[in-house]
Image (cartoon, rainbow, N blue to C red):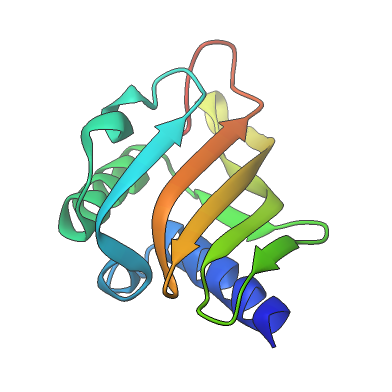
Length: 134
């Protein structure tokens, strides 16, 4: 049961990054911490509220044509009955790069949850030669 919840939460996290911005208010805690370990993503370090996150995701998506995230591989879930714990899963991202060439990047997100909402995120991706897709 907690495994299903964790997978669903990660799927909703991914859908939020794919443009379903209303999910920010549903899956994110009223105050949270983001930790992105890739070039260009430091703008997320100072975001701690769902609406601000949704706004930044929208801004990022506008500047990156065709950006699409997808979960990959198996999720690792450690969560108690109060839906407090961790969900970790690899993901892939694709978008249209310079000159129209498709670009693919992979990474891993780790979501810390408290009572069923995301309170902290660690995200690491392959990077794009100093440019971030965030």
